[in-house]
Length: 148
Image (cartoon, rainbow, N blue to C red; front, side):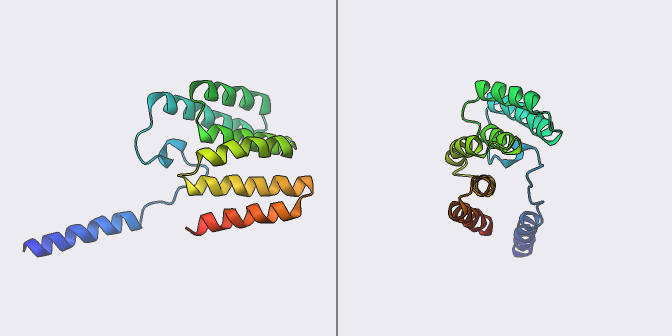
């Protein structure tokens, strides 16, 4: 009986992890943390999420203000750097975008999903700048990270 209960427990635990929803770039950013982030990080993430919505709506000046405010609260918020890079990409400033994405890449070392997103966006920026070889390198890095 104990073995049967143990087997059922293991099966249940494994099935829960197998059927977990895969996170996307549109999900709440706090869900990407393995442990509960500090309160200042949570506050910074909320501002970043508001900025993400403003970028989608092409309200770039509002998004920029929110991202700057977010980085004042938590200067190591990788998400703020990613969305700042996205903002400049959307504003057709690929060189500036790539400079900001370099900081995001450093901070996303432990989050391959988002590190891949940085390389993907960086690849698009390199194409805009006319650097096809560098664009291809970053695209391959993004693809390799997604496969893991």
